[in-house]
Image 1: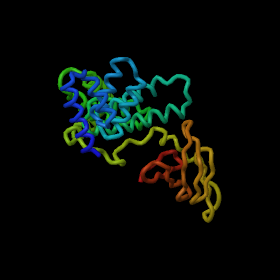
Image 2 (image 1 turned 120 degrees about the vertical axis):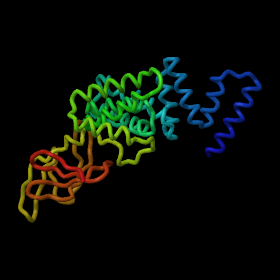
Image 3 (image 1 turned 90 degrees about the horizontal axis):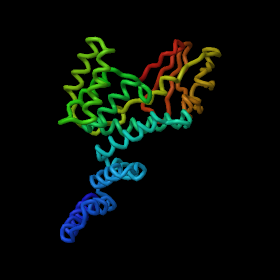
Length: 271
């Protein structure tokens, strides 16, 4: 399929060169043929013409094919919308933020500077992903290394410096090591940050006997092995209770890798 797109795009370029067709027309034809670079460029043209709706459509098409710049731009658009969300329900805002972070993470790990700057902001704020100052420094510093003067470089540097003011020497040393070790790559699922709402899953109590215990998680009561739907931070989450002890419950969360141990002291451990 990729070979066909390349051949088609080349053929279009040849025809356009012969007919004197405007460059934007060449881009539009190539984008509609499925070329991700052209789709990304077409989306940028819509941005220039203040048409964010069509820009998002074409950024999505390009991002879905793994084009890092489009993933970063799409993530940035969704993140801004999530932050400025007025009048939408918390569940919708949380879902929008989670989607934004997913695209941003994909772009940042592949070296996209806008993605890295936004990833730094996400980790620093802790609204749509768990707050992590070391990661905020790392991604902010990487974004600041952009060549020339750019919004991403300025934003990344600002977030990095804001994180530094809240970090100790050991955290700063760890962050610098992560920056030095970074190599652009397509991330695995395990590298993507967890949604911030996970930390709001609480074990509120344990009742019953050693032979038959019940765990109160959120607004629901679970037996061992039972799967239920729970409302967390305004959204619906499917949780399965895998094990219950006298002071903790181990659960799996649909759509999230691994298991979690909820303790009665309200801390949660990842396994």
